[in-house]
Length: 361
Image (tube, rainbow, N blue to C red; front, side, top):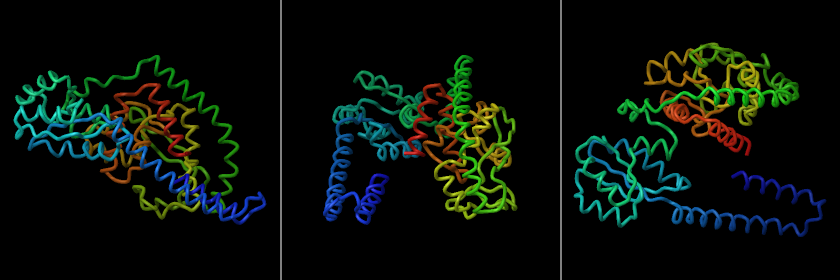
């Protein structure tokens, strides 16, 4: 979409301002026509190539009691071919005999079987050795979510209490490296904030009355509250009726505020929070105390996200963006729990690079 938009802008510019000597103008329309044809052919060919050549065939087991757990996983794999996997077959272990299961696995050249039920189940105790004898890797559905999709479903975590035994705090040396990266990067970015501030301040003041910097209480590591700084993007009396969830096309957001949010310039003052040690560059986004108290009562294990320092960006942000409801918060928490379990310096760098690519392509 960005490529097409830029190309259309360029076509309009060269058409109406022909001082670059491009002639005849009809060539621009021919270029546009062939551009659409070529990019369509390229994308269709590339997607077909990815789907046919680089996808690992998966099989997933199911029973009458476990179909719902796998539905989201199957849908995600089908909609994300770039992950390199495809659902080759679904095996109902309570209906299909073992001989037919073997035929299915061989027919579809399955390399991995996802076990979508209790591994202690008697039927699975018989099937897992069978899969291994065929040189087929077996993993649980929870592991498949973690390794392939990158989040930990709450319903599966609740039914697998031993899952928390693999949660390990970040080592002291890695913690020092992470803090050093946070501080050094923030000090490098701080002069840009100072240079940008007057221009943003003028735009905010011209657009609406109120302060330039918006201060708000947020919950940090170990549930310690701190003041978060942002460029103000809403009208001054946006919350005169109390805290509210953000909405799609939120009427409380000003015109300039919408531009600041789209470019994420409104987040830049949080560099000050990083320098003060209240935020990290990468971590779960800090929530407001009013919402935190409510969410901890409604969502199991929500308090786990307070075990680490919150961040300006995070694994949930690059995978799910904004949360506007309890359901969205649950989805984001599943990504936050995955980050909590897998946190590392390299993962932080990956998230930062993905954030730059996602928000400033």
